[in-house]
Length: 127
Image (cartoon, rainbow, N blue to C red; front, side, top):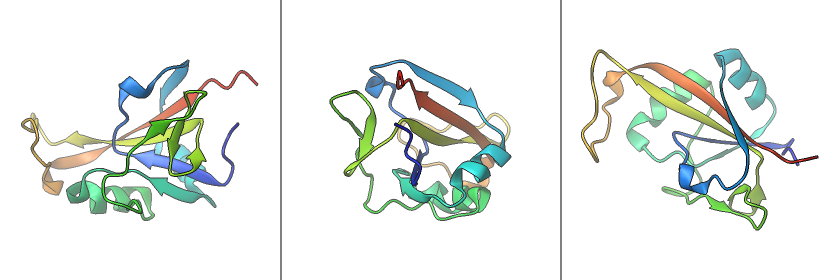
């Protein structure tokens, strides 16, 4: 059930939407670049203040089509956005400078980001 034409990417993923077996793996930058190559990017990026830094790192546009799009689950418990279903989600999570930790609800200033952690979430498809 792998989506071969699009890639779903965001800055986090709500674990409350995990309702079937999922593998979470840290990935190198090269794996992200390979996954993005030739794909239509479907983004649910939620923090506009970090978007430019993330796009610089990824080497492509990551702006969502709407402000703060909502992920949902289909009847088989796969993540969906709009009318597309995915069995993979890529997460770009910021690494912060020093011991910085944002306050609850605080937007992270881009200058506090020192790098990015890449996670690939893969839903078991039992194929």
